Image (tube, rainbow, N blue to C red):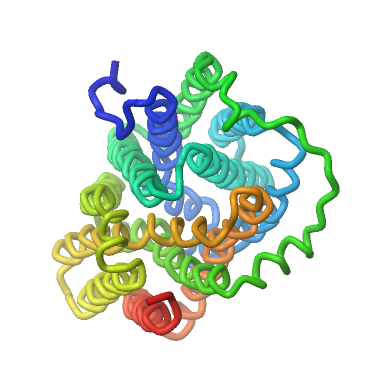
Length: 395
């Protein structure tokens, strides 16, 4: 069996189970990443229109992220997990059958919202098993296996799109989501674990109060801003690298290869990032990670050689691997266990906000400047995040 070939980080059966789930969900979500921008371009006809469309999707996801607190207070996490996987499978498969812009918009909004919801619920599951002493390690390992899944999905998605067609890629994500649902449902290992199964919650919640209470804490404010800027890079990577590859005359398989290779240094670094954070402090490690990405994007802007640039874009994963688990750890260390369901959805709105801002930055860039200027603009943003992290996070 495939999972037995991959050594999970925890010999505890529940820890192994959630490592496997994180990897499987990442394979499904990332399978379509190499093809989505170009698939949408066949419908929308221009890079600017694709950018606007991703901004629309980000607004929908923002609403979903804010509403997740209500969802988790009303519905058990296991139910959320199962329903999200089932609907995700249907929505992705339906993309093969529809042709109208309105139908594609509805299905894409559903797909992206459910992928965010799955990310949140898996993070909450992991937090339930983590202790104060091993939270950094658990977060690092979660992102490690998530990135292994992403690497597999990106390589497979790019290959299938090049050798077959977009429809095969969408069908693949649908089937993997069904597999994850069946695997999750049949694993009764969590059924009686008190850390996982919540009683159904019906207490009244106030969205605006949740948001206000979240930002009252200065450390949560800081890591939220840092997370927004970090996700600008992630959104950039999945939106503009496929377009850059296509504009350079290469096939979708090259996009999948670049995005997959970017996962390799992230996987290597994330194994030890939790330990790095203890030795050098999260502040120093996060700053270094942003500087790595900023320097590489600046070189890509200056370089006229696409193949060299593809390699440099792959190396940016090293910087991302230093930032990703530590930002999550920093948030959780400044949020009590009793507040996690209330605030985690608010925190995760950094994702849709970044997804909204990234294409807007791209649109403005394309109006006044050539395509390649997006690299230096986002490079400057990474240096800005490094400066902000250095001056604001705890020393």
